[in-house]
Image 1 (cartoon, one colour):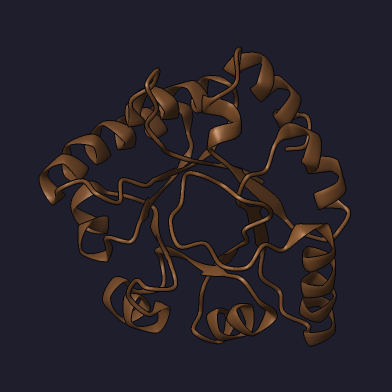
Image 2 (image 1 turned 135 degrees about the vertical axis):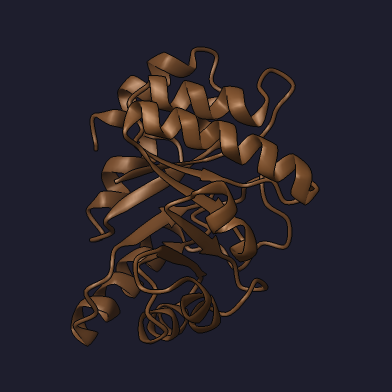
Length: 203
C-alpha cells in the first residue's frame, strides 16, 4: 500500500501533486490542507473526488470529519490533536475508512480498540511537511512496534510516514509494516514520474 499525502510546493498546487501521484500509479490519496478554509478545502476536495473516481483510487481527507460526506470522501485521517477516532466513528458509521496517527505501540493499541481501519505511524525521520513532530522512529522503532503489534494479535494495517524516500522503502517493508505514505519525496524530486516508478515497484 503506497499512500500519497498532498502538499503544495513552489512547483505544484495541492491538486497538481495529487494528479501527478495518480498518473504515477498511486491509488490512495489523502488531501491534507491544514491551513485552508473550509470553502477552499471543499472546492479542492470536490476536484480530488473527481480525479480519484477517474483513477479508481481511494480518497481520504485529513482531519475534517464534518466535511467527509459533503465532499464524498471514502474516509478521514485523524491526527493526535484531531477528533477522537471513537467519536468520528459514531458520526460517520462503519462504512467510512478512519485512519489514526501513531508514534508508539500504545497509540496503535488505542486506535485499534477505537475501531480505526489503519494506522499512519511515524515519523520515520525529520520532515518539513509537518509541524510539531513526535519522536523519530527510524528502522529500529518500526521493528519494535511491529513486533508488539504481531504479539498482540492486532490485525490492522500500519503505514510508515515521515520523511521517507524511495531508498528507504525496502528496509522499512522488512519491519512488517503494510505500506508507506509519501509526500515530499515525490514533489521535490527532479523528475517526479521517474521517482514514482521507483516507488511503485513496492506496491
